Image (cartoon, rainbow, N blue to C red; front, side, top):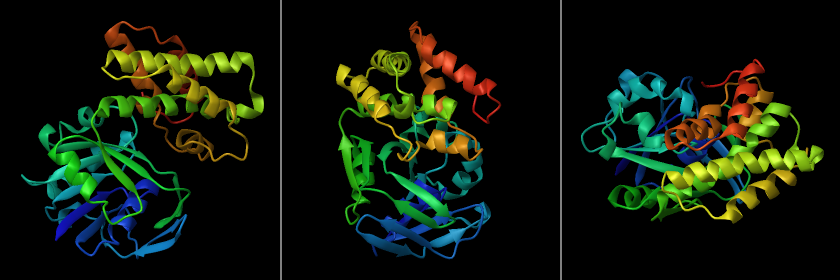
Length: 295
């Protein structure tokens, strides 16, 4: 029996916990701030229900085989009490978060060799505690190697497609290139397609091109088509399109993952001597808007 603890039962963590709990060979524990009776996820193919063990006190947590960290990037330190209890010598910790700095954010809490960075594309939203809506099929990428392969195996009996990505760095930066343009609607509070113009396109393209340039300096292979894909996605975003998480967080008055999405482009751009004026300006303006964000 493989034991798994999921820290952070939000839209992503709750959906993953529910899917993993469908496999009788896995024992799933959810680490939450508030108690939950069960988890119900409306998926494209029907509703799934899970009744995992739910813990709200880290002191009650046992050592497990796997920990899935599904919190926002700004909540890293809040996971420390859980990790101190859950992680043993053989525990592997999958970091299921946005951005490209999965290992850097957690290596002061868990030995780097036990960390497994994970890239996920799982459109899901939480309607209430323990209640999720999954819009379409999910995809997960883990790095090559024993840890990544073992993580992928956890999802063998789920409807989420999990694979090993031989070039994980490229996969992570390609996703970031797709996500980084969302800072524009988060700042304007408007769907970009509804107000599209040549000037707005230049801003979106600049943000994505800066991201691609920094990613290449970090060792990622990013084609021009990735930037074009970001521009097309933002051009076709309508008011009916579900907001990105950073846009939705600002609409709800929640803290936003600005550093993980755009601040990192500025920081690593400085490291490599690559100018990132578009990302720098938008990050600065979003900070000056008075909305919660991460410096």
